[in-house]
Image (cartoon, rainbow, N blue to C red):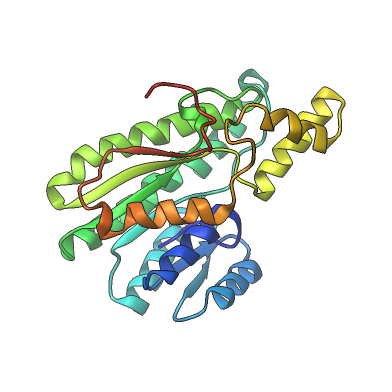
Length: 249
């Protein structure tokens, strides 16, 4: 099961898993976009329109996956990002919506698949977060605070589920060339009164490899972490960032 898979990082993960032989169930809020993504991936890919802010929609996706494939072995949690802005600029409703989008969606997806994985003797969960869990990103208050909670959840789950042979890891994208990153470049450009291209060049100076990542570079790492090749990896945080994050751990 791969969430947020109609495009960008989620699509890259689903495509990489399918390329390795996995039967993939993909979800996204846009019904037409997720159907198109499934057609592009090919094979027996299942596409289900899901708004991950809805517990009912997540439950329906899980049920549809079990009906098609008989169970769940792997889960990739993922969603879009909340609005940009300073933490103090948002009201309670905005915080609740962001919590539903980032934190509660992850909790609900995990709760749905854990019994299924236990019944099959184990599984793997990969949680996608952000570099903000290590270094807060200016003007992304909602995302920074709530993704840190998701990061703490991933580590907690890794400890709680290890005995059930369910591995839980966290993957952190740096500046991967996606619509979301291009949107953030445009927001930065507007704030600094420069062009989006100038904002991108400014961002590139912070990346040791000197470029944005490609989505397939992220997808391949995610597929590895979900695969049996990573059978002794759990509770880990893996950065796919070209060296962007400067922290030691």
